[in-house]
Length: 104
Image (cartoon, rainbow, N blue to C red; front, top):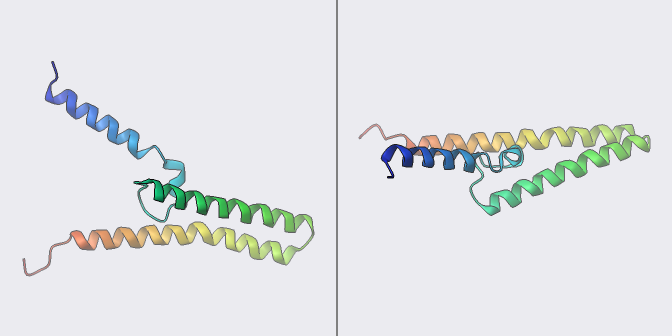
């Protein structure tokens, strides 16, 4: 017989599985949670850009273009920082929307 506690446990398990499904891509996602395929595509695009910049910095080092490699490494560092800032601003906006106005 299906009881309420079993249903609650199944719901909790499914929520935990859905949260960790794309967890490695959350680093490259501009949104705090990956909820649909568009978010996955954007995260994969940012991850690909990150990998291309890392490889190009290694290529510049191999060709002994140290200043170019330094500039590319700075860009590589700025990509995750920019994504983290965008996640924080989205979270702040979401939290502000949930607050009730003072007149209520």
